[in-house]
View (spheres, rainbow, N blue to C red):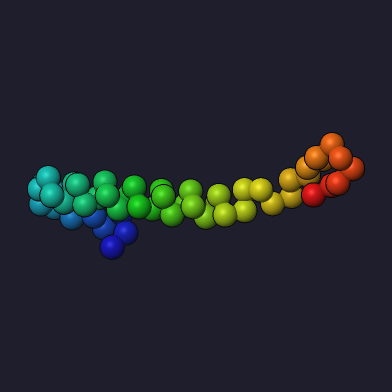
Length: 55
C-alpha cells in the first residue's frame, strides 16, 4: 500500500497504528529512492592517482 493510502486510512480512523503505518511507508519509500540514487553515485567520476594511471 502506498503512503497516500496509509494517510487516507489514518484520516478515516484516527488510529495511531494507522499513522505509524503511514510514517513507516514514507520512510521505506525514502530509503528506496536514496538507494536508487546511490547506485550510480560514482558514475562518470574521473580520478588521477598521481602515478600516470587514470581510472
